[in-house]
Image 1: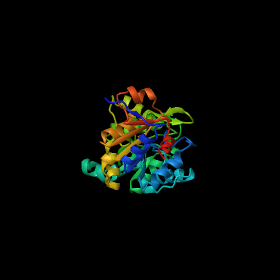
Image 2 (image 1 turned 120 degrees about the horizontal axis):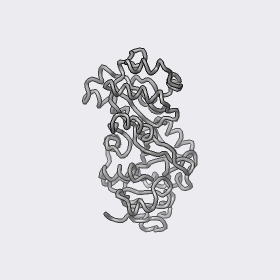
Image 3 (image 1 turned 90 degrees about the horizontal axis):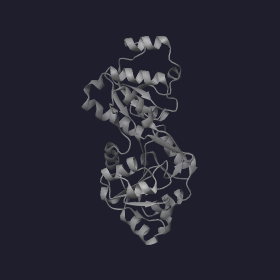
Image 4 (image 1 turned 90 degrees about the vertical axis):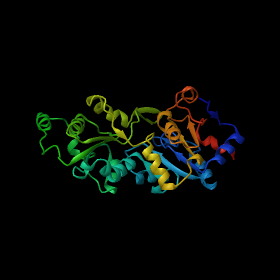
Length: 310
């Protein structure tokens, strides 16, 4: 396994790196910002790439925001973007549920509702595809479990378990609780498909790590005897196929930029992209980039270091 090339401080190497690719896929959290803190150099780096006629695509596993939410966040930080340039895990999951799942699992045509464990970003993207859902941000599911809940769920009572639910979709949920876990489990036990927007174990914010979407689905995996959900965020290649189909680019001329080896870098490597660039402003450490099982082609201390190639 080759050693990644360190680009920071190497003007000629950075210049050659940028010239090599036509498309740059960017993770957001841990690369452009952390929480609400924009990393210095992020905006001018993106501006520099656009001036060089490079295509920029924002690829995020954060399911709590819709594509429009992300566009607004990008613009609030001084980064011009269109909805079409944003690919999120909620969007990928919604596309799959509406357009692919009915072909591979015909039963979903009849049981076509989705029980959501997650935030408004998932709901918005499901609605954009005309998919009915329940759970999610509904206050009715943000309460303690009662003795009646146990009885009705155990009996599969249709007054609490909607018989039209054919999919359970789990993402990052800031209001995750025991009641939602109970509902999700019993829907799956009654034949609903177990899907996840993404499986990130952690979420970087404010310079620290917090539970990610993978930590929300983990209790269900444990309850179901290690049954893993089908996931749609990085590194799942369904998202890569969707991005390629949308923008019609040559993979050898594209580069994935990210801070995680197990999602971002793996996404680019398994997608057979021409390059992968790791940044040290998020989850991965220098040691992981240099010695881990999944290594980027290049790495920098921070994204803004690419400006040194000017």
